[in-house]
Image 1: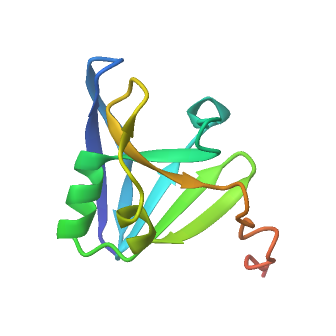
Image 2: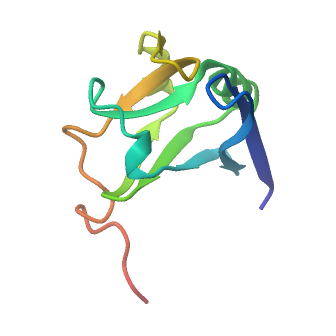
Length: 110
């Protein structure tokens, strides 16, 4: 398995930050409660990261949040309008009506 760290520039912090990790076509973004955007009811992915993921032929996005792990098809991002709330241009994936993998019992303990 190839792990690729994906970085982005955060204009608020004025430095490059880790956006997530790409593993075999799946982008994994770990977020905390402070990353949740109430207006969007979800989490954002920066435009430059989306461009990088498109070039890398990303298929799936996993958001690992305090409320669970949420899975999206990469193409879902392409239908969202980019918005800037101060941390650069991003597209947001809503978790409002999305069930987490834990709620769907997709993770089975062995």
